[in-house]
Image 1 (cartoon, helix red, strand yellow):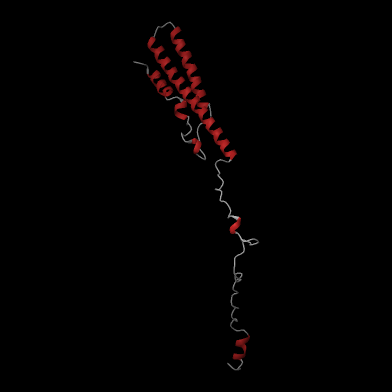
Image 2: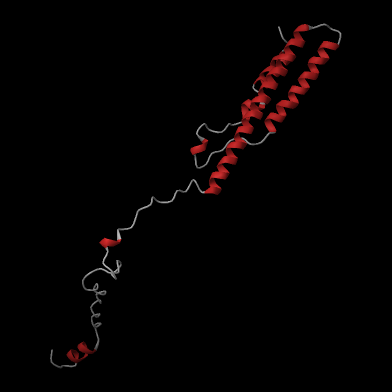
Amino acid sequence: MPSPRVVALALVSSLGCSVAFVDRPPANHASLPYFDCTSSRLAPATDTVLTGLLGLAALGSVTDGTRDATATVEITALAAAALGSAAYGYMNVSRCRDAKDALRERMVMGSLVRPPPYVPAAPLSLQRPGADPWLAAGPPPAGPVAPPPPAAPPGGPADAGAREGGAP
C-alpha cells in the first residue's frame, strides 16, 4: 500500500497543470470571428519542472540503498504522468498560438468583412441619354405646411373694446 503522501502527490500530478488549465483552440476556429484559448506556456513549464523533480526523486530512490522498488515505480509513474501533462500542454499551446496567428492574419486581410455582392448596372441601351436617374418625373414635392397663426390671448385688443361698452 503506497503512503498517503505518495497518493496525494499522485492525485495532484496526474491531473497536471496543463490538463487542468490549458484550453485548446476550438475545432472550427478557422471560421470563427473570435475565440480564446491558452497561449501561455506557464502550465506546461510547471509540469516540466515537476517532471524533473520527480525524475530526481526516482533517481534518488534507486540510489539510496533501501532497495524499495515500490517507491521507485510509484515516483516514476508520477513523473511519466507529469511528462504526459507537459506534452499535452505544449502541444495545445502551440496549436492555440498557430490558430491565433491565423485569426490575426484573417483580420488584417479583411476576410471577416466581406464586400457586398456585385450587382451590374443596367445596360446602356435601357437608359435614356442625358437622363438623371436621381430626378423623379413629375412636379417637385410640396414644402412643409405652415402651422396656423396662434389665437389672440384673452385680454388682448379684441376684448378691450367689449369691456368698455363698445359693440360686441
